[in-house]
Length: 127
Image (cartoon, rainbow, N blue to C red; front, side, top):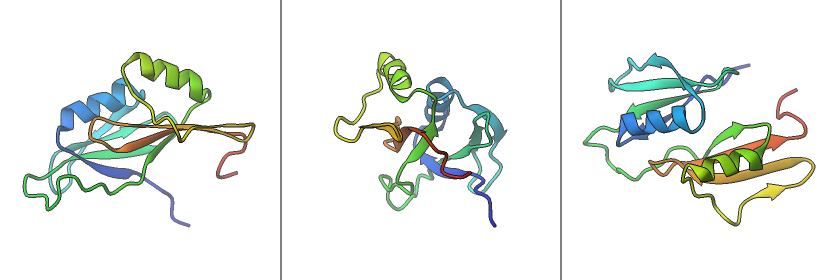
């Protein structure tokens, strides 16, 4: 079976997006990107989840193109983390939250417009 290693997303402002995921989501720089095109960062959480942020090339065919539906971040307390992020000025979608005994979730967007999810599940996706 293949194991998910990371998601990669483009950034118009590489440093600002890196700083957002470090400051807001508590991720850490795991590696400075060395791919093609050069420039970027691999950011990781404490549980092996990673994202790669790549500088969007100037000649990118569609500067508004998004390649990821959303990035999901598992947290112990979805609505506690939501309140924390709101204090930092993050705005959340108002009609997509779920709050029941099996799943708690809400959505926001990062500075580049990528959709992000905070999620807690009573049972992990993978046992």
